[in-house]
Image (cartoon, rainbow, N blue to C red):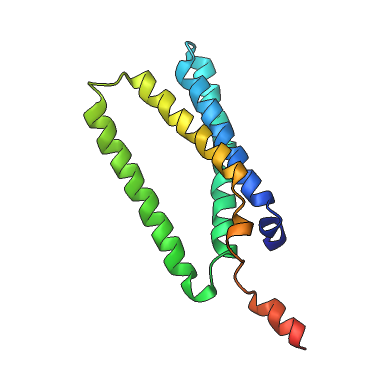
Length: 140
């Protein structure tokens, strides 16, 4: 898995997954058919799962062993806080911005994140954490 992350393929999985979630989300929100919306909701699960696995792989690869727990705790806390801010903001904006427009904006944010993620290569920004097993094998 480390080779996959270091090759940039994991970054492409993250970007592709975000793009697929954004497109599916926008299609679901604008669908006039309940059965079609239910199918689209089910289809979001695959890319969302791929995104979660790829992000956690990147976090694991690019964090030192001593800090990995802190990195995952911080990532989880920031994610939950962002969800809280989004829910609170949505409740205040409900009377100002129509629901469909708000959900279309959410889908568009996924698409923008996908494009940015596709253009920015994480492996070129940060060196992967040293692998103690490969270091030990190299010294023998």
